[in-house]
Amino acid sequence: MSTGRSLLDKVWDLHKVGALPSGQDQLFIGLHLIHEVTSPQAFQALKDRGLKVMFPGRTFATVDHIVPTDDQRRPFADEQAEAMMQAIEGNTREHGIRFFGLGSEEQGIVHIIGPELGLTQPGMTIACGDSHTATHGALGSLAFGVGTSQIRDILATQTLSLTRPKVRRIDVSGSLAPGISSKDLIIRIIADLGVNGGIGFAYEYAGPAIESLPMEARLTLCNMSIEAGARAGYVNPDATTFSYLKGRKFAPQGADFDKAVVFWKGIASDPDAHYDDVFKLDGASVEPMVAWGINPGQAVGVTERLPRMSEVRPEDRDALRKAYEHTGFLENSPLQGLPIDVAFVGSCTNGRISDLREAARVVKGKKVSPRVKALAVPGSRSVARQAQAEGLPDIFRAAGFQWREAGCSMCLAMNPDKLTDRQVCASSSNRNFIGRQGSPKGRTLLMSPAMVAAAALAGEVVDVRGIKAGA
Image (cartoon, helix red, strand yellow):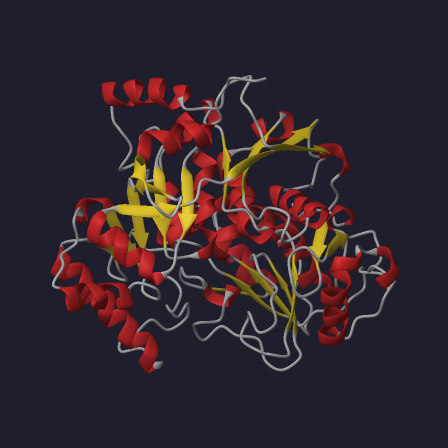
C-alpha cells in the first residue's frame, strides 16, 4: 500500500489545530478573503458578542459582486448595494483590515486579485465567503468557500471547522488540442463525473495536460471544482507556479522567495501518494464544450447534439427534464445554430488578461451580430490596465462589445448587468442555474471566452475552430 502523502494531507496536517468531538478538525486559516455581500452579518455577529478580529493582517477585503460596471458614482442607485458598500467600508476601517475598494487601483473580483497580488501562495489554507474559492488551489493551496457563520468564526478565531475530504486525482493525459481551453476541460470533467460526483472529495488535477497549462488556465480549472460537488480543487505547485508568483506584491521577496520555493516544492504530492480515487481522461479527446442546461454538468461538445432522455443516467433524468422544460430546447437537437441574445466575457472564471486576449483575438476586425448585446468585463483594475496597454478595449469596442469596469457583472446579476425575460446568454462565467443571471426565465450557455466571442459574431452557437482569428 502506498505510504506517500498528497498535498491535501500535508497542508491539512500543517494547519490542524486539533480534533473536535464532532469528528471534524479545527484548521488554522492562513489567508481570509472577504467581500461586501457575505461579510456584513459576520461583522455584526462579532459586534453583538463584543469580539474583535483576532488577526486583521490575515484578512483582505475587496468589492466585486454588487459593483456596477458602467456607472460607479456614489451613492449607488441600488440602495441595498450602497448599504453593503458602506458596511464593508466601515467594518474594514474599524477592524484595521486592508481594503481594496473602488478608490484602490488593486480592486477587483476577490478570486482574481488574490493570485495577482501574490496573496495566494502554495501550502496555504485559504477561506472566503464565496462558492468559487477553490480557484486559489491552482497555486497549490487548500481553498474553501464558507458561509457567513464561518466567516464570523474565522474573523474571531482565525480557525475553521472542517471534515477532511477524500482525494480524487483527475489525471489528464496527453495535451489539449489547439483552440481548446481549460474551461472546456473543466466542463468536460463535470459532465463526465456529474455535479454531485465530487461530494466528499477534493480534486487534485494532474497529468501532462495539466502540467502544461499556464497559471491563468489552472485558475479557471480549479475555479469550477465546486460545480463538480468537490470541496476543493488544486494543482501541485511547480516551476509555472513559482514563475507566476515571483515579484508579486505580497509574495516573498529576494532570499525569502528562494526559501519559500524550497517549502513549496516540499508540499507537492509525493510520487507515491495515496488517492481514494483516480479518474483518467485523454486531453486530446476534449472539444469546445457548452453547458446548455440548468447546471454545469448538462454539457455537450459543440459538434454534438443535445441528449435524449434515454441516453442519460436514471438519476440525471429529472434534472434533464427540468432543463428542457426551462430552456425550451429539444432533445437530440444540434447545439450549433442555437441563437443567442447576449454575450458575456468576464467573471472570476474567465475575466483575466489571457481570457480577454483570446476573445479579442476572435473578434478583431469583425462585427458582433446586430441582435446581440455583448459585454467584455475585466476581472480587476490591474487586468483592465494591462488590457488598455495592449489595446484590447479598442478591439472590443470596434467589434461592437461594451467595455466595462472591473466587477462580477453578469455572472450573478447582483448589479445592473442582468438578462431580461427569455434571453439566451453565451457566458464565460461558471453557473447556469435558473435565475442566475437575473431573469427567472433567462437561459445561460457556459463556454470558453473564445467560444463566447465566436457566438457574439455569429449571433448563434458556433464552433470557434471554424473562425479565422483577426489579423
